[in-house]
Amino acid sequence: MGKSKEISQDLRKHFVDLHKSGSSLGAISKRLKVPCSSVQTIVRRYKHHGTTQPSYHSGRRRDLSPRDERTLVQKVQINPRTANDLLKMLKETGTKASIYPQ
Image (cartoon, rainbow, N blue to C red; front, top):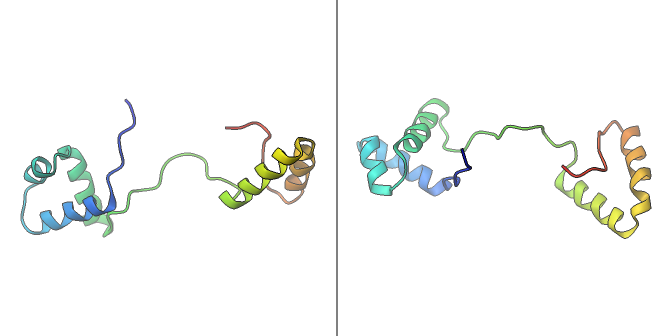
């Protein structure tokens, strides 16, 4: 299956507000033109966790912060020969990194 568009935080809150006011999940779905399963999932998550924030996404967590990544990319773009030196430095600090893009 393909990826679907993420539902905005405002719309998620609107689902919960309509549900609290007594609207059924099907009525909310038809009114806002969103699949009923999406409304049901968001309302259920709100009831269980007390928040409408989407859950975390799967996959491996990054070892480097986005700022560190940008800094490394800039240094390697300026001088590509520094890539191996930077990798050695990162390994010494205990951070795993690879030259190959993911």
